[in-house]
Image (tube, rainbow, N blue to C red; front, side):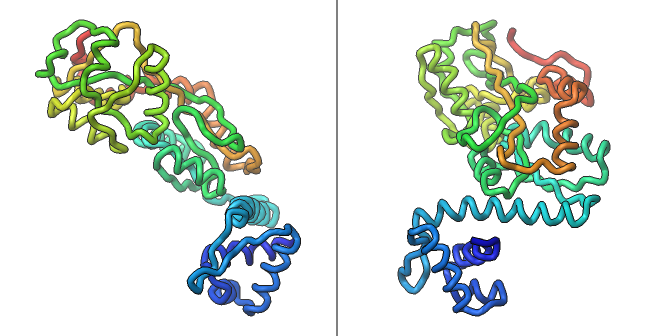
Length: 318
């Protein structure tokens, strides 16, 4: 089997048509058909079925497509690098919602100041989507909160982010110094969507105390949760860095929960078979440098984040 076979296979899978794949690759239809037959004969299985005048990929075909897409992309990267040793491509960086919203912009700003020759392309999405993009080699590396679900991905913890519980000043618990966990879980909770890594982390944390997560609101949007809390619709669990200004301006109040800390880990993640280009190595070295790690630790980063605000004390019930 050759690289050419797999390029043809990918084209057929994406277009679901021998004719369109041939046009896309500027080759004849018989050539495409022969290549697919040779692949199927070689592996002893069917990769496509003809349904309603379209070619539909089989389960085996989908599995092959995952591998083929990955190593063809790696091959193309290799060609660029070795044909031009000084080549700087575009570093494709992904991130989950929390890291992408509050940490990544500052990281990229400082990285570009340090390595202006490296271009970056950013994608912020749910952790599950970012994992899929890493596995298909559509991203080079990513910042992912919590655990990853594929054994093909390598993770290196780089910093932590702290979550806090916040509510409207008029909420019945706003004036309490602290509240027990059993009282907290009885309240309407506003949190990330159920398919997020943050929800999985929070759910696992609560289950260790014998409780289940019961949410009144679930959202992929952190801003939606913040606004719901301001409208006194429940207690929101938000990244501390997000709530700084709302607490400072007294539009929200922090609720301290007895003996309960919500701190999650954000990890640098990439495919275990990924070739680490010079650009990737530069970014990894930058991100794991002691100075960067210190800056991104939750407490110091929150302080830096709020430096531009008035120097008043954050309003919280501690």
